[in-house]
Length: 414
Image (cartoon, rainbow, N blue to C red; front, top):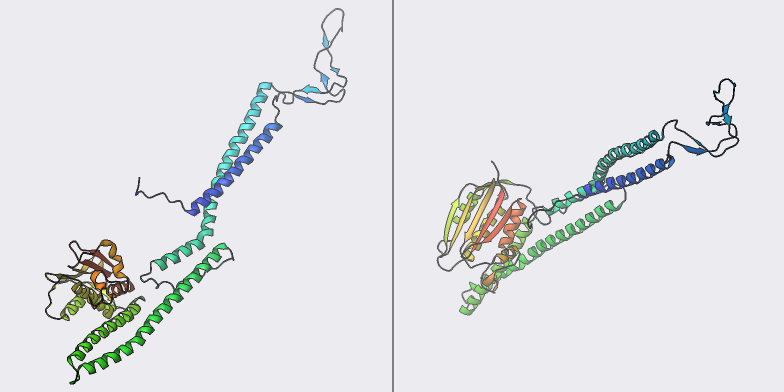
């Protein structure tokens, strides 16, 4: 039946069964050989045996009649000695043949039963010792598995790469595997650190010329002698420059929000939502629906404010031209602080939703130059900040168009 989980047999169990099976197989072979040797030593007709006898050492059991008196004809039995009759049949058991056969049978049965019981007991003991020894030998593998699991479950993709197995022990295959794993993790950690430093340094270096360009353009546009063409060109260049500045700020914020947050303070998501909504410009064709219930958590207030800003701005930007709305709600659900932002908008295929969290990915018409001032980093920053706080973010396409984004963070009690 499909969907049914298969029985999982651990390698420790398999090793214990292999140890016990080999021991039992060896014991069965040993018991069989022992049985054959004992059966060979016991005669098949155990009542009598042919032996070599010296002359005069064995009395003749046949009676010899001699006349002791003429009056009485009573025969007297006198033993006679066989002259060197070899070999001679002698009753070695001193009993009947039937009793000897039973004795032989009992001896062989005792060999089988007693040997089988001893083999079963020692075999069971071997399986138990095999289980304990296998567990002892597999401890380094369990340590490697736990380290790899912690790295894989880290909130950010690189936040757990500083961990190492650092396995101690003999220079065997398991230690070689652990050292190779540590070397791989170290290279990944170095690569991620280099990437973050490059993005941060490049962003800082690009911010200075953009600031200078903006200042020169503003001076040129606001000159009294500037012609309408110059003013229009200057405003277009200022808009492009502003978009590049937002892109640089987004990259800096993304590199800042990826590491795990160490210093945290008490924050209520409801207060952040009310503050962000109050800062939005008046007017616009998109209606806001706000339900801000208490959602206490612990984190960086600036980064969490940026999460709400990005989600609300995305909801406003990617919406219908008429009759659109953005719904924002906060609250406690399943012992977690939850923020939900949903909006109307274009229909988004379900397979496109994971790509929305990729940096610089913009869906549909947003990819067209000049279609939107967005840089394609909004949801990427939201995801990075949520994971840095030990939370997560999920997105689902809304029926009829639009998107429902849910951010869940650890609940905090003040």
